[in-house]
Structure formats: C-alpha cells, structure tokens
Length: 224
Image 1 (cartoon, rainbow, N blue to C red):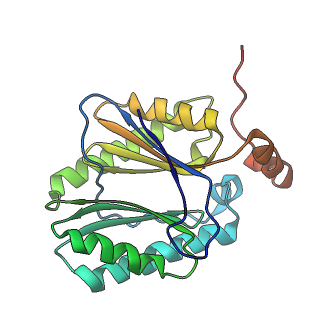
Image 2: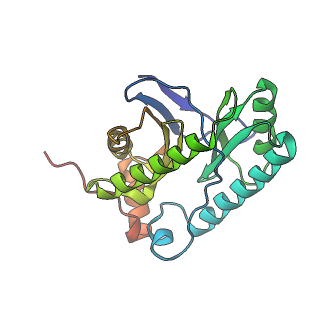
C-alpha cells in the first residue's frame, strides 16, 4: 500500500495538501477511467451539504466542460479521457494509445482558468469498450449507494468515478473519513481497486467549515 503526496503541477501555484492512495481489492488493475465529464448537481440539498462553496461547485463544472472540449480538440476520438474536478483539483483518467497525448492533455488542462492542480492517471493503452464503460457506471452507482447506506460517512463529501473496476474517490475529508470511504467502496462487489484522491482536512478545519455552514458537518466521530 503506497501513499503519495500530490503537489500542484502548475508553476506558481500554492501546493495543495492532497493524498493519493491506491488500495488493492482483489486483483490489481491499472488505473484508468471512462470518458465521463462529471458535473455536480447544483440544486437544493446537494449544494447545501457540499464542502465546497456554491461558487467553487460552479467552477468545477466549468473546468470539466472546458477541459473536455479542449481534449476533444487535441486528440479527437483516438483517446478516451475522463476529466473530474473537485475543489479545482483535476483528476485525468482514461486511455490513450499515444504516450505523447498524455502529456499534451495534462499541459492543456493545466491552462484552463481556475485549475489549481492535476493528478494525471491516463493510461497508455487502447480505449475501453462501451460494455466496460457501462459496467463502470453501474459500479459508480453501487459505490455511491453504499456510501449513502453507511451511517458514519457523509456521502455527499465524496465524489466517485470508476474505470475498468477501479474506483477513484475525491473530496475534502478527514483522514478517518478517507479511510472509511475507501473501506466502504472496497467492499462493493466488482470493485478491483480503490484510489483515494482526497484533499485531507484536519478535524479543526472540518469544524471551521461546520461552524461557517452547519449543514456541512462531518460524519459522527468514531465511538470507542
């Protein structure tokens, strides 16, 4: 089990305190993801309970849309890239048969307005099939449902993306929440690996968020 601290890959930007951790759940598979441009639902309770400000949620959606359009301009149909933004940190996943495209895409997305950092998980390989992508969508739904069912996880604090059985988790969470969310995801039938791409908050930082916006409160503390 390897833990990697991810720092901003864009010159001049303040590094983010982010942890990426891959957790094996059965057979290990390469980290890659389907072409999905995730967009936060920006209405009602989801906005109120999200740990990002409403403005940041809109920014994330804009980053995803602009990045996806830029990727299409650069590589067209030869690559299959997923752009997921959370708190302006961008996760790139998917497949490209050309190693050069992987670098080109990262550089292009880094220039999108608002992007603070990038985690590039694009695999150099052929594109996944429509059947594989459909299965990934089902796994994403199952993981989200499991997070909702868990009584000690704030499900809306975690963003889920899946590719070829590999589940990526993003969000602003404490170490305890990160570990618990990964544990829940790992137990979902069909998940082969869980990759944590979280911005880690201290308990004090989460408490400050909760004070500022009471509906943001974290999951109940562990009971001993």
